Every structure is written in C-alpha cells, then in structure tokens.
Length: 442
Ligand code: SF4
Ligand code: SF4
Image (cartoon, rainbow, N blue to C red; front, side, top):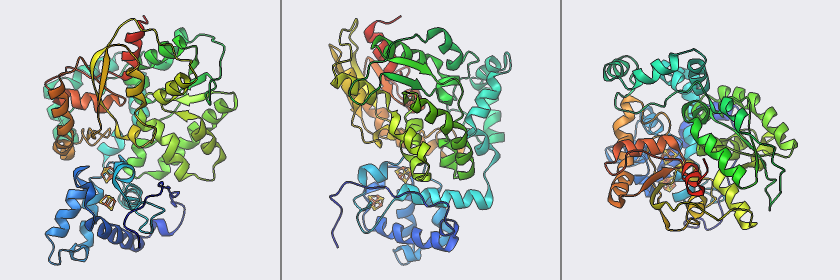
C-alpha cells in the first residue's frame, strides 16, 4: 500500500439517497475506520477543534487507540466540524483515489445528517440557518431593520440574547437593510453588449446571496460598477432563495433539497440565456460549484449551473488573460492584508483575488491562508465562540504585525470576525470594494 497519494484528488458523490447513508451502525463503523486513519496521521491537528477533540479522546482512552473511545463520544468530534473543507483539500494525502478513501468533511456531514434526522436541531440553530427567511422577514417590515440593528449593538439586549438563545454577546451580528441589493440594482444595471473572452460570455448574473442582499448591499454595487467598467453586462438575479450552505452545515439535507429546487430552475434558465454566474460570498459559490453537484450528481440542471458558476476574481482573471481587463487605475492601495477564506481556497482556483489586486501600481497584497473560524454560526454560538476566537488568533496576529493600509477577505463574515479581534485594523473590506476604489469609480 502506498503512503499518501500523488494523484489529483477526486470527490465521490454524496450517497445520501441510499439506505446505508442513514444506517447508524454503518456510520459508526466508518467513523471508527476514518478516525483510526487520522490517529495515525494527525496532520490536521491545527485546522479546527474536531481533530484535537478526536486525538484527546484517543490519548485519554485506556487503549490509546480508537477502540478505546466510547462510540457515544464520536459526536464530540462531529460537533466541532463546521465544514470548511480544508482538511480534504489542503492536508489529506488519503483522499480518493487513495485506497484509504478518506473524505473527512463529508463523513462529518453524514453524521450531522443522521443526528438532524434523529434529534432535530436547537431552535436557535434553525433560526440562525434560515438566513433568507430571517433577514427577508425583518427587511419587509418598516423600521424593524433599524430597531434590529440598534438592538444588536445594545449590550443589555445582547446579554439577554446570550442567556435566552445562547448567541454570544460579543459576536458581531450582520446588519439588515431594507434597501436591498436586488432593489438597488434596478437603477444601476445598464445594457452593455456582451463580449465573450476566453470561456467567459461577458454576460454575468450576480446571485446576491442572503448576506449580499440584506446585510451588505454596497458590495453588490461595487460588483456592478467594476464589471460594467470592464465592459461586462451584469444583472442581479431578481429573486432567489438561500443557497443552502447553512442548512448543509446543520445536516438538514431535506431543506438543502428544497432550496435547490427553488433556485436551480431559475439559474439554469439564465445559463440557457447565455449568462455566466457569480456571487459575492465564497461559501455560496462553493455550494453551486461543489456541494450541490455532489449531492445531486444526476441532476443535469445542477451540473449546468456548476459549469457556469465562477468565483468573481477567477472571472476577472479569465478576462485579464484575454486582455479584456482595464489596467488604468486612479489610486494605488498600498499595503493590503488578505485573509483567504476557506471556502474560496478549496475551490482550487489559486489566489486570484490577490493576483488581480497586485495588478494595481504600488499595491502589495500579503495573503494569510488561515481559517477565520467564523463559519457563519460557529463564531456566533455561545458554546463555540471561544474556540472560534482561538482558531482566528494566528491570522489576527499576522494582521496586527503587518499593520496594513487595508484589510480584506472575500468572506465579509470572516473579515469582520478578524477585524473585530485585531487591534491593527478597524474594519474589513471586500476586495471588490477596493478594486472599485482603485479604479476611482463613483
Ligand atoms: S471540514 Fe474544516 S472544520 Fe471540518 S474537520 Fe475538516 S478542517 Fe475541521
Ligand atoms: S483528514 Fe487526512 S490529513 Fe487530516 S488527520 Fe485525517 S488522515 Fe490525516
């Protein structure tokens, strides 16, 4: 048997429609098998709290092996996984086609799915993962958005929220805007003739995402300005549901399927009309590029959407390779600290955000490829808040040491988490916001 694989990783579809996927004994056998491979390897110990939890369980057992760990404790490892996917893509030498066939994140997903089906989830977790219903509901009621945003900054209210709902009082919560990106887009979209370059059609539909639509609509405006400046026809998709990533991380696969059925027909019809697709949040891009295609491998429309979905800076880079990106900039950006979001790293596209920003004169981007530990909910839940801060610490230290002019992350939640903890920066910016600034686009 070979030690480690030198071949490109392949990802097997998630067999969640089979009876075996839902069989507890079969799951426990597979957890024991994979935990044993991890015990002999231990490369992932610094990635998250799942692996230290596993290794502590083994090291504190009587046998010092996985067979000494109580099966009832297997979930302690599962509960610390927030599906960042880093262990699969950046560390593991035993992923398929290696015969050990380790897919740690999707094994965690299987365990989460069984747990969700058998026990459901806490009310808090159901609310936190119902992002479009939660934010969309608040955003339709006059003044409630202002009240909610004020309450989220009110220490007394946050303490009460922590004791009643176990939402960490010191975790920043996303703002909610009634003037959403989808509403703003109507006045901004222009009829630009699409020019294909390389594999890009030059006709782009922006999937706003829950965060981009309700919490930070300014980022979507930056997208529109930058792509229009580069002669790309860009529309904002007028109606959408959550991509389903929060529900996936909860193990609620029926809700993932319901959201897929709401979104995919519209996205597939846009692809039929010649649109490429993108989104401002890497997790949502990854959902369409990887997770839905692996959950629904026989769904032709899911595969069609996958083929047309791009990370925004991957898209700009493809246009740049075809000499279609404008390289005249009004402003340089100086020294930039860049936290590379896990769900962008695992798209395996390289550091295209850094590469685009490095095209700007007198601009240096230093990439910090460490997890922020945010995950959308992990940094917000009271019981995991401290662990998320610990996971963020190496990046926080590097950002503080760098003393940058700007701090960016493609994931606004990860960026805000780091900025909140770092002394050296006041806030995080989306890289598209900086690109707009560099172009001098009002
Ligand atoms: S997917 Fe991420 S959070 Fe889960 S075990 Fe792997 S590295 Fe840890
Ligand atoms: S997931 Fe892979 S790399 Fe990580 S500890 Fe387990 S076997 Fe080692």
